Length: 397
Image (tube, rainbow, N blue to C red):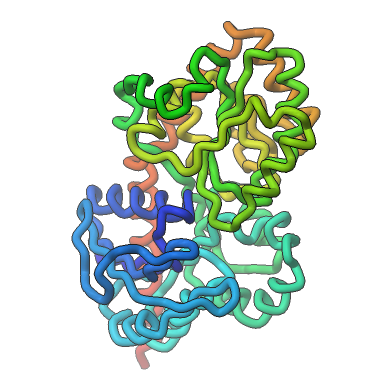
């Protein structure tokens, strides 16, 4: 079984979608699926230092990068488009990632031309809040290009049930398949030495750390977090907020102003993107985790916080009601007061917070590891191939 994944970019500045595809590809390879990825060499305002138009061997899968140029906010790659039309027939299923991306369009068209089944993974980009953000740019594009592509897909992969409901409200009739993101349990088996983290960010030493881990983006609710943390910090002066994540939209100056206006800027550390050892260290050093998002597909960083046994506060916009149902996190309305009150509850009741963190860890290890996710998605691919084969047989005169 040969599966091709097509994604606009895999640069580190793009956060969750890039990371999730890398780990998904590795887990699918372990299941015996032959995985190729094609993408551009975009990395925010820069490009990746990688060879283009040649296969690079990774952990069980291959990836090929193509040069691109920018048309306003869109990435365009003529070389990737040509490659797709020349090679897409070599695959059993094509899995696209993202919506509103010009670089993905040739994959849809090539699949439709050569009758190769494809599955679309919107990564939360069809959520109500996301569609409403810059709606004037998206409405026409969606109706003219994205909706027809969605209607012709074999399936649409959603990360959470709420995401599926949003897509159905748009009138999309394509069958949905629920396949969330995951984590590697082995990544949370050993705790790192925290000294390097404290040396890099000495202002965090000895503090009660509240961690935000994610892209610096309008939909992440950092305006809400500023107001919420100001209230928390007034009651618990030993608290310190760590905002860890890349800023590929140049949104950080606005975010910093949120905290200046809330009069708590001096108690906030902006680390930029953390990966590898430092990311593990901040998850270990943190006392609480917060995700104040207006909208998410299904956040990998939430799973990481839970896997690290952190008491978590997440909004309903994070699309993770299972966490509330399991008693694994405080899931609150999208409001700074609700976020603050939930954080304060944890700080006032540390033993209860510890128990909820352990429940969160158990939930993730039982249901949201990449091994389990890969088995689920492999079954989806096999179903699509079976349905395509049956269709081809019945179409023969």
